[in-house]
Length: 75
Image 1: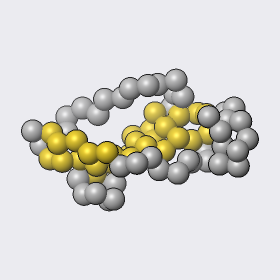
Image 2 (image 1 turned 180 degrees about the vertical axis):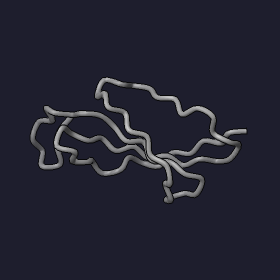
Image 3 (image 1 turned 60 degrees about the vertical axis):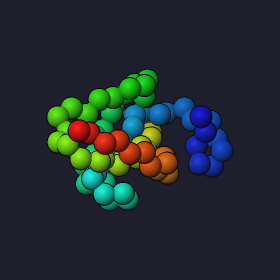
């Protein structure tokens, strides 16, 4: 992994998951304060279609650009 300026990423601190029920409108955020976490479950979502993006952040709280948006329908 590299920083936006191309330098080696050495201080990844975690991830933020942004989500909501409208594409491009993320009204909820979950912070994962562990850079080694590979999976995360958001429990108890009411039935709907949810849209998600992810951003990484470093120890200085600098955020990466957003990932591609993904969606999931909960029935």
